[in-house]
Picture 1 (cartoon, each protein chain N blue to C red):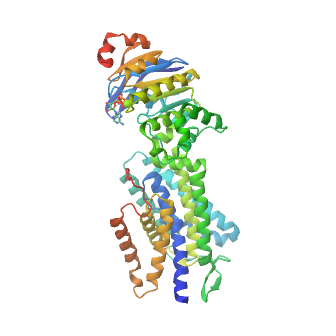
Picture 2: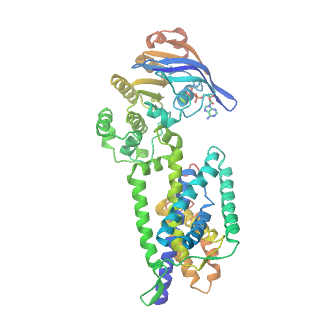
Picture 3: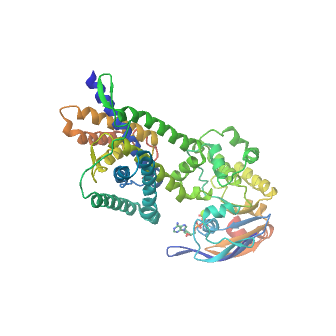
Length: 231
Length: 291
Ligand SMILES: Nc1ncnc2c1ncn2[C@@H]1O[C@H](COP(=O)(O)OP(=O)(O)OP(=O)(O)O)[C@@H](O)[C@H]1O
Ligand SMILES: [Mg+2]
């Protein structure tokens, strides 16, 4: 579904992503794991159109979407749940959800119900300013907001960051549920253990390069992965 | 008593006119963190355009055309002078704004030859009326009501429409707004369009009270409106409106006293006091992360 070919991204003089090639097959959960600064967020940000790659191509199905503006990418059905949630603090919960559907002109009530069924907590707090939610609730809102665009591909940048273990479990089971609804998932995680358990396909990114690739199961039993990421 | 009433009337009408300018400063600041120094000059150009348009066209045509051209001017300034500097340091954008301000003033001097131009008499607005024994122009009475109606419409737009929601989102976070599919450049243009439109309406009300208009006519009202916006908490629309009425009222009171010569000094003294006591202004945000 999504194909990345020899993607390179620079920040000024620094090469953050040094020519990576990988694929996200339709309907699967794919995870990208790697240490701090490996270039994971940069990869997702360039797919979302927030940073322009120095070279390389990004294809969605047969279409070249490299360097399209972010709003065009959203309209193609790709959404990013950014690192650190970034909900709009002054907007209410329901406004945050509605703004996730900014490009849609059709009726949103079904999608709102779906998001509320995934995250009942958000329904209780729908009129509250998003800035007053707890960290875990904000993460749920960020995921819900992304779903409101009816994405084909949902990219998630460290959704478990800073959350209590129980909440992390919730988030991962929700990711599965979303995937079962037909949404393809590209997931970045520090929490490699959880990520590899739900992933169909996984890549290890080290200082801007992909070094290991395989199914989630394969990587869970890979010695190098065990040593570096599973502790 | 009549004296007090006349001070009060001129205070609220001046305040209303400043409010319409101040909203332009505050909206643009809210979204770009930019003090749009050219805004007072857009207000002046709106006045001059009315002068020239009204000599060639009937008023019912000149007035809407003036508003359309003022909006186009605000839009064009943003596209030409600020948009190319979107990722430049804020100081560069500010200098660009100062440049546009001088450009507009110089252009106005070039076109008018530096001579004062008399503002057209607008039927109704320029007519005299006597209330409570005080003789004034209709514009004095109309201004506060028109301002309240416009501010009401604006807050409805900001708080209850999709565009308004996008404006609030972009004001907080460019990048995440883009991830929602919002075109931030359109939203930014929108704020310039709204700000310029209100400045156009403001210029009509303001200059109806004054016999003539010169290229520097935008500078002082612009500055006072800017002070009003800071006073109220820059970035906040209600703040700008309340600030403008306070500034307008105090200006009117001082102008009616033996110390009238100090009215601008007083305005700035007031600003300094507010900034010392409450740096974010009356309605300012608690966290001023980007400032
Ligand atoms: N805006 C930027 N300007 C300059 N350098 C940047 C910028 N963003 C990221 N980098 C650099 O690019 C490299 C990759 O960063 P990136 O955020 O993609 O890492 P990451 O894998 O997501 O790390 P983490 O797990 O800590 O989130 C890092 O060395 C980082 O310092
Ligand atoms: Mg990251």
